[in-house]
Image (tube, rainbow, N blue to C red; front, top):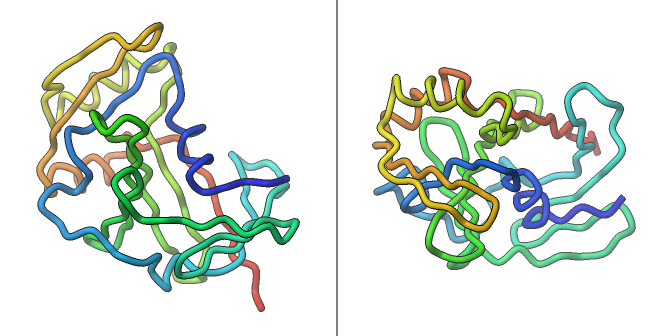
Length: 178
């Protein structure tokens, strides 16, 4: 199955309710200009304990899916990666007003754990309660059927959010050994 990193980000961030950010996270930290070596490799994508069905290869500037089709990953105004405290933060914006975030945690064995905030309406109020322990929801807006909640954490607050488990939508990207 063909998966593209930017498309995967959009799928992870689509839902009835969403947490967004005013600017790419962590704010005040420098954006990377290339895909880091720690993220490069060929991966099997395992969603919530299911058997791996998708593979992808990430290089310094592009991805190659299981069929060998190359996808350029331009780090630009709508896809920004930052590194902080051992995590990579993939920031995605389709309209440059708000940013969505995927937290990527490299493992010692080369695997990646990719985490996002849940968007399920059934658990969203619990998520907002958890968030309020660490950061203020600074604004909300309606975008069609979707309610957007925006937060503006400091880098220290962002790490607390990551470690608290609010980024609970996880997938494992299992690194294929050469």
